Length: 639
Image 1: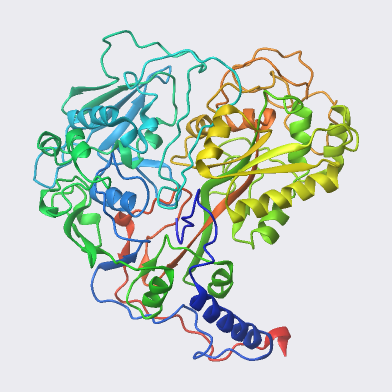
Image 2: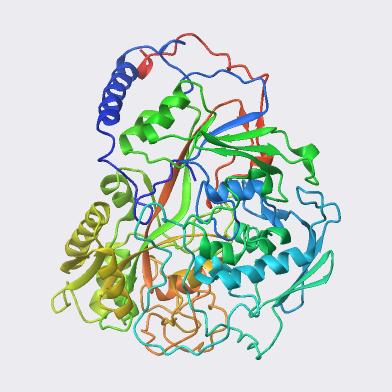
């Protein structure tokens, strides 16, 4: 979530904008290294926390979130800080547990699936109220979701509703070359802002087609009962509807064009919802909009919220800052309580890492290299496996990317706060040169001769170029394979993706949900070769020709097929991580990291994979005192 990298497709660094700050960091880091290696830390020069810590006396949270919220409409909010404000102002059927991202009760106090998982019934709490005192009803959700279908592409994450009956019609897909499934954008502000353009027209099991005139799949059975009919089963639907786009908008705002689709057509591109008149914004969340000026956005605790007594914060202030230097300076001076969503350099990470109020976590933004499986020799699973196993992801993250990313040996990150759990496939992709060479030889290219030069498509960006060069060097050393870089500006890059004019292409996705199937469809929306049942996942300790002992991917039907054999015919969509790891339509490269500074007197401000903090849980400990410790720490090396 935090200090999140906001260049094109969540890049890691923005080096050119911080010349003065970089110089300061270099001096400070050099001093800290000298002191840490030979001197002694005292209470005065070995601070536990970054900057001044003055415990507030009020329940007011001052937050530098990479800018000021401008969009207060659940349908139009694309990325933080807008989505952070929407989560505070509006409540969905469910909410995310801010630590584990499990769905917890929101407006819905309970939910129940049908036996086949195609229908979900939500029972709404009777004490849920809008900020104007009116009751929140099931029809509010139906009306708001229907509005999103009318907004179409103007709603950045509208694709998340695609599984609801009536959102879009079934259309057959002609399988040809792989098509892009972008969760990618050509500029920094939109990074992570758009949802998948994935097409899921060949699902398993086959969805019930929508008949002409069939009703919308969300139906208000009564004022407090919402029935949602899905095109295909989804056991994680309660987690999906915790996303901000599923949150309701009050009927009066739609009818008066405050938040309606007609207002969107006529309003500025930002899609501001009554921005100049905060009192007009009728919301149903724990907070309501109090003030919006260039000097800041203020939210106040909502008196009509059903769980208002459990909300500790009385006020939230979104504080503006021109850049990361200004945000960090304000934090260091004790003027704000948290900094998130700002650009950060590797040098800054090294400087801030020793402080106890500095946080680092994995962010659910994946960079991966997609194979053109319609083009030989990349239609051969053994070739894809060889290229994947020959990449040392740990070295790539530590060296090429300066340690500010997380090596991705899977397509989905481990859940925060529960790293021992394995909600998806337990398999991962190791770095194993010997096996990679064996696989390439079995595919007919021992030691590389005869293998065509790889055309690696990368959009023009210095960081992406460096990564591509490092990967190509690994392929050359391990497999004897040469790579040609095809660097294109964004528009040309997108055109090449759509035309399938590449062998391997750099891709990225900013995950909007923890739902496994949704994320897999976002990455692999077109038909891809999926190995038959019985195909083993990559295991460096098992010879490629050994019989498979892996669990078969669901809904496959060829148990006698040989493992590692290429699958050339169109097969159903990839819906699980296990299928993706078995068939390797792409290779994961790295996850982005997120960073934050949070004052020690702030509790309940949790970081997570989805960049989705919950202000409902935040509390200011007005009695906080610094921990006691010795005034001098031992010298390095025990001297």
